[in-house]
Length: 468
Image (cartoon, rainbow, N blue to C red):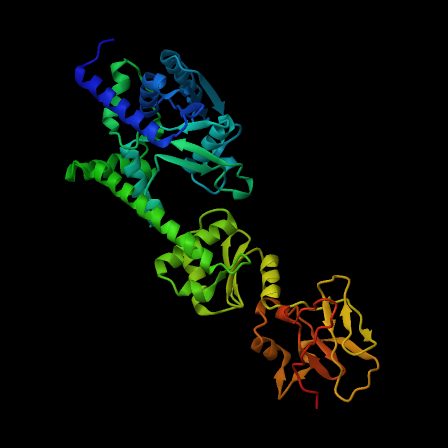
């Protein structure tokens, strides 16, 4: 059908910009472009433009409609989407959510639950070489940036959506993530009203989602209340917010690169961060380094509050506090390093950082040492103890036994617990550590640098005087 020249010019301009983005973003054309197709104005306009330039892209196009079953008329929307796909002469697949979205993702809002299920369906449909294409435009970008700013997001959130990105699905459960899903949003710079003229000139009627009018949803409140007021104050507000996001994106990437380089210098070689070096860098890099480190540990981005709490722990010098980061994941500080993991993992870190080869297991019986400088081993080859002969003591049997805190006074009224504190044995494991006594003498607990090498006995210093 004939179209007004102004509309045709608009469509051609959008097509040219889309093709330019396609060639800039993909060195090799994707095998398929899987379009998230609700049948609404935005996805319909995107599909019409893609259809017109398909020959220049060398990628096949397939529409993917996700039926969330959130409304009684959801099935009718799916039928309408099928009708629109027939007009476009593009293949369509309809994927239905199995179960109640709310129950599938408890603890999050309905928008987030639906988004999670939608991306799971996209992932299930996507093969190697495919790319998911979404119809987000300039106003969507402005709304996203404003929402993130309202939550107090840093540069990463304030940059909004990227035109080409990879999303780990499921991002809410990193242990189940099966790979990054490529997502392309070629219309992020396009005006919503211009896009919505495209279906109308073809006499196509988009699917209308009544929930889009619900102003109790924050994004809708921004769309219907805040954005119109901003554009009334400044007609170029949407474009300016999008430009802000683009500027922030570049600066965010630079800061992320600097933080990664800094983290390599701060990392202690055992999965932790060296506190002294961390606190010596600028606070902006401190936050980013800790954020990246915690994300690697727990599988998702921590909140600003949790990052700040870890930095406060590092600054405090406390080696007894623990901070809950996410579910069963904790953070603690041991022997000058920050560690993250579950409780048992942190105890292992504490043992290692204290250099402890002991304590001996609770159920071990006293052992006899038949000669000086002999090495006593447990069944676990990592647990061993060398005995040093007591001065003026004949090289006869010496008994190795356990000593608890209340059994021995070390030196001039110093308790074993105080001695452990002085020797920087972590509070996380002090209650698990047993001292080693030969008769009335308290012996040094072996550390890694006192290791047993090449079959030679290791020499162990004593850490206490004889009991009076």
